Image (tube, rainbow, N blue to C red):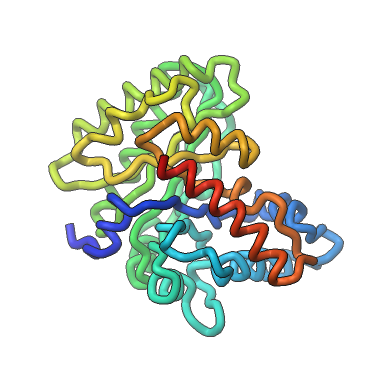
Length: 297
């Protein structure tokens, strides 16, 4: 595949973590509220998305948001299509910050069935992937959710993920396969064992040289995904924070030596729109340092 060699090398062996800046329409109000921007502060979707774009731009331009600790960033589609200081976001990330750009391509989740939530159909997927390539995006991210240890449900989630991954690979991009396991599941450990087996089976069916990444909930059993990280078709295994606090997510991640972080809420914890730039940079810098340390141990 014709991947960008510098970006491929950075994602394969670079020290650091992937920032998840891809909150979509459904989760945007909550993300903004945590940042100190309430629904009463904006009127309609356009103002809401401008507010979240301003927050993301502030993060991306912060002193510590560089490839020294942040090796990649996952963008929402609107962010990919937007610019910061007049420069397309994906281009600015790579050229100015040294951060490899990814794009969230899933369009939300179906209702729970067999203990899981499959991805909604992605309309005009070919057009979206072509636009991503044009913008200089390196890879994609697509999320499903597993709520319980249901073998049929988990098998269906993984099969759907890999079918989409094949389309992404065909477009010349690297897919991040994300079958999240709900951290509050009563059968989390059992679900993760089933998930590991299904992922391994599907990885073994991939053609030689077709690279994917895995984004997984930090497992109850430390090291559960070590073998997957060493698979010939796996570029990197990254961890989602899944609702854990920054401290707990980092503590759990530190016990899994082959995983690096790809955190969203944990990255922005404690940030507030009313902070001065100095206060904002210091708070974000502390979060980045914690996540970085947990990712390189």
